[in-house]
Length: 496
Image (tube, rainbow, N blue to C red):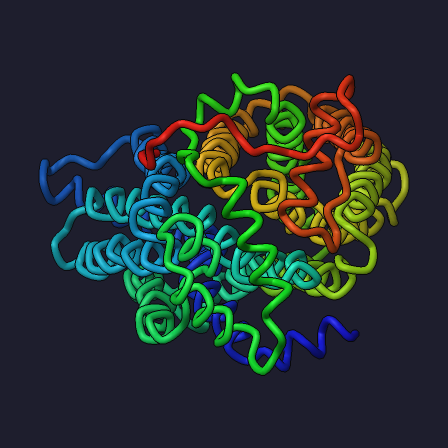
């Protein structure tokens, strides 16, 4: 609670969190969920457009192909954005990267808004690619910006707000997509173009807030700007200790250069960090949370919920993740990262096992669909408590200033590639495994829980220099515990 009070006292830090989040990960969750409501309307528009052009209706399988392209271009754009995020963060800085990123949102909103009037479903496809690029950039730059701007005792809670805004975007997208609002057959262009609103809010608010102090000091070499940014973020607090830590980190990184993504895999000094990033980053996308969301509608239908009410019940799934991430934000500095990850994946294993049993026995007992529905909500809650938010903190805390942008590029590329592949393969997995669909995801959850509990270093309450020194001991166990970390190999260049 003391950490929460300090967060409230730091009004500028709180405003920074909100300004970065509303046009950042909120956009990711929002654009991920709003595409579900107008599915049939966009497919009908595609068919009508083709018929107007050629005089012939588009065959059903080609309508589905166009729709699958509209959906899959979003993660493809996210992959491009993730690869773009590192160079942007190094060249423009964290705050300016988020601001420039809104160019993609503005362009996409224009394409969506005028697509029906122009009679072009290709504009929708291009718009989905652009909002995907925007999401890929913001998913990497926002946690980097917030993690570098927060004090070490609040770093986990502040970085967790990225997951909170993602869940909030999911819920808002579900709400706005209701038939009574913008989910109707005439309003779907406005629904897709509504991503303009959070982008405009960020453009109006973020320029008034400070840049990352670490970027200003270590990357730009501007101690005065760094101190001014810290003073605004911390309020009337003694900055001597934190400035000393920043200077120590700057001394360690002096003369180094920003790492390239492929270099992270070659350096022994980054062995534990890269392994944690790849294992846990991949597990977050392969743990079956998306499968729960995809299967939820069928489970709700089997539980006897009428089709016209399912859209309202589905909002509860996003609400569960939002509630869980809020809870995780409050306890992360008390419980630690490792406990939340291990507990989250452990609970997902438990609920996934019960879910599988409920699917297998749903024809034998009338109450089994209700048990399956409870497992859906419980699993999503478990995902929100740990993996949803804590995984995004790893690249900030496990890598130093020179390797952090490249680490986010690797993490983002992995996440978006996995998201694309799971979306592509999921219908075939569902058809092939039927009621045992969750078994492969259970294996991933077990492996992630074991890795988190045994191999992930705890970073709660530690400065970046202290974390680097501990990782140095883990990566070079044969050297003495008293060996000080000397930083990465010195190469005098600042190019990414």
